[in-house]
Structures are given as C-alpha cells and as structure tokens.
Length: 493
Image (cartoon, rainbow, N blue to C red; front, side, top):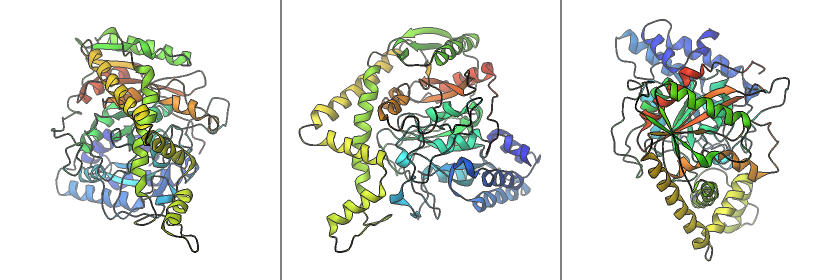
C-alpha cells in the first residue's frame, strides 16, 4: 500500500473515481504512514477515524454512481489553526490545550463537503508566530530533509511547518496552511513542495484562530501546482460570516491551468537583490527567468521602491493586530485558566497569560501593545499603515508593466533547528521576500526550483495581480514543467 502514499491529490481523486483503488485503501495507507512518522512531530492530534469515515462515504458514493466532489477520497492534514468540530484545536499553544470547538471552520467544512477526509491536526508555530516551527508548545516539527552528510535536525519553515513536513514526507498528499507574512510560501520553499497564498479574502477566515486579521489568509500546500489548484478551488468562496470575504465566484482553476505564457510579461524587481541572499538562490532565480522565457513570457525589469520598508512595517502591523486579537485569551471563557490561591480577577488574567503564551507570542504582544499605546500610535502604527499603502501602490505600478512578478521565496535554504533562536531579527528576515505580497493582499505562490549543494530544496515565488490566482498557477506550472523537480527526502524517520 505504500505506493499509494506517493500519489498526490489529483492522482488519488482520479484513481478513486475510476476504481483503480478504493478511498479506504488510500486512507489506511496514509493513516499508517502518519503513525510511523512520529519522529517528525508533524501532527498534534491524529484523526484516523475521520479519514476512514470520509473514505467510506466516498466509496459508497462511487458505488451509487454519485459525483465524489473535487477532493473525493483524498485524506489531508489540517493545520491546527482551523477549528474542527469535536477535535482539539490549539493553535499550538498551551493556552488553548484541550479546547474542542463546537463548530467547524468554513474552510475545513468546504473541504469535507468536497469529499476530503482529515488525517489529523498539524503542528505549527504557536498562534502562527514564527518562521521555523520552534515556538510550538507541542515541540519542534522536524523537516524530513537533512543536509547531505549530516544528521542535524532541519527547520521545516514556519508557521505552517507541520503542513510542509507532512506533505514533503509523503504522510499527507496535501495540507491546509495559513499565510500572514509568508507562512505558506516559506515552509513550502524549505521542504520542496508547492504552496499558494490566494488574494486576501479569497478564503474565509471564519473559524481560523486569528493572528493578524488584515493579513491572515488560508491556502493549500501540496506537491504539485495542479494539486494546489484543485484544493484551492475547494477551499475558496464567499462566506457571509467573514466581513473581509470576497463576494466573487470561485474560478475553475484546475480546468484553466495552462503553461503557455506567450504574450505574458514577467517582472523582475531590482530591489529583491538583497545583501545576504544565498548565491545559489540568486542562481536559481536566473534559472527561473529562463524557464519562463522558454514558456513564452517576456522578462521585464520592474521597481518596487518601498520594499526595504515592508518588513519593518509588517513587524509593526502584525504584532499590533496580534496584541488586539490575543486579548480574548483571559482564562474566563475557554482554554487554560490559572487561578492562584486567593487571586483576584487581574491576577487570574496575568497568571493565565503568563503560563499559557510562549516567549515569541509574548514578544509580539509586547511589541504590538507598545506601538498601539498613547504617544506611540502615530509614530509607529500610523506610519506602518502608510508604508503598507506605498507597498501596495508599488505593486500597482509594477503590474502596469507586467502580468506577474518572479522573485526568490526565501533568502536562504532551510537552517538547523536551534541555530537562530538567539537572533530573532535574523529569523524575521526569513520573510523578507514574502511579506510585501502579504501587505498588499496579493496572490503569491512558491514552487520548488532546485536543490542546493547541501541537497536542500530552494523555491521560487510568483506574485500575481489581485484575484489572478490563475495567472500565478499558470506561471508556477510553467516553472514546474521545466524544472523537473523530483527530489524527495531520504527516509530517516
């Protein structure tokens, strides 16, 4: 059965539909793979019964001659930021340990309605705050990749590190992720898979534990562009319960896939040639230009002059919104309650939050509270919002000259776990290429390009115009076809 775990979303769905194998066989194969991969620590909770129940439903539908849905028979991993009815949802934080929602997030419900099943809840950086998956209360996620000649544990990226690790290790054919400032794209690049952050508002945020509400966006992570297109189609759509949800029809992205880029212009932002970027990443960027030229595109130079201010602005806006969003975790309504003997209400608040939040979450709450405080609001938060507007205008002007932008996803390949723990600023710089598209709410996708001299994957990023996920997917497909990337980690777990 192990060969079933090498199949992606499209191959599983089509194989179940044409009777090559049953959905139950697929679910059993992946459940076994998940159980055997405990050393990755990719899952916080496993739900083999959920995967089997969905598989049995798909097999019964097929027997009756009914349509299975676009995710029919496909078991997936669910990032533990999405509320799942009756299944613990923690955001990888002690403060929510044991919290079992009485409702289902809109995105997860759409996936179940499309025929998918759940293998379990995936580990992440606590409250999605982190770039290495080392801030989880439930322990680090290990990347399935290793440097050649080394057994050092590597970062799977963050915050969607459980998702990237599970997909790269072939213990899930696909997974949900969320992207606030690169948390789908950076882990996808680190682990040699694909991940797309759609236009802000394309996927509902209802039932997703909030980090920074004006930035958070759900998206799929899978091993191919085609699989991402299928899954995004299932996840997206208007939701009246989310005030920021786009009231637009969901395009048929899978049917629209086309790697012919004749007549398309791809922009290369000169400001993305930054100090500290690995030479091998710059080399892969050059290779990416050639692949897109070969697909028929014209390469043009563009300028995004406010790029250097994007990361500082992000690390004001995101913590400010986090400070506000995380105020609800007070020990009163749900989750952890720490009530010392003889304590009053304020003491309970303080004790609960001190015990429940990890160091990185506390750091961002402190930053956010500071920049929102009297006397500093205008100096920091208002200025950051102005920069955000300028970053958006940069993209608008660039897209007057091109259809999409090609850039590196990250400035480096994956790094050993623990190597940046004493240096939060270097850790934050991991998101330098990903944050601008997040601030502007644009669709952006990471596609694996090559492996470096250490045998670790490198990704390239396509950023598209608002609502043009199809253009992003098509450019990604063109690169995927030309890169021929088929590297996968050697099993050690």
